[in-house]
Image 1 (cartoon, protein in one colour):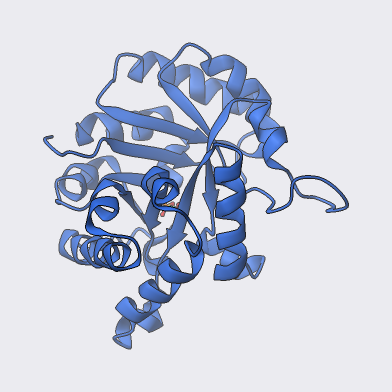
Image 2 (spheres, helix red, strand yellow):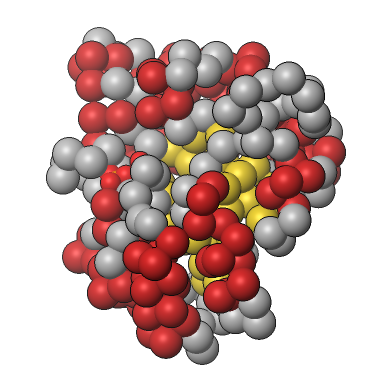
Length: 254
Ligand code: PGA
């Protein structure tokens, strides 16, 4: 596939996989995907499996991501994990503002922006998630919702930091439901997000930023989604939990 931006496909394992299961999965992915160079491949296990997965993928083409991070560096924040702790395990990417965290943990755009700055301060890369609900889409509010989320969650980043950031467009109605946005819906939303980035930063920055699509990405729809001009990868949930599906998504995207 001929795009200026290198594809980035990340598996968001969510609250799945014990250490033993996580090792089975990454060892299988190493076997299947060991020679792939065209795509940045990222696995995002739960915190408890980061150390073992980190050791298992040393010297491989798989990169490690975390599913969340505290905006604070240290201290009295029960249950939170700081950047320095993630860096001990060679984490490179951090998913921020996933819709499940926006919904269940009430994460706001302002908090996500603070976290994005903390992620960059630690020389890690954020994958910042945005996306509309079904009611918002049906109410014709998709663009307004996306613009508010993009402007709020990426506020305060420098141009360099923005270029190094990844955005994931995940329509909430497509997450875990088996309903994928049509390729046109995905492309339209991605182009719109890039336009907002151009107005917040500039055209040059907007052209660099990789925008992933997320929401029921499967081996059979990956190729068509990835072929859209503004779709630069995928954030995969359910289909990232088996070697077969995740490996096929990546192979079908190349
Ligand atoms: P899904 O999840 O692929 O299971 O729809 C995507 C996500 O939530 O990142």
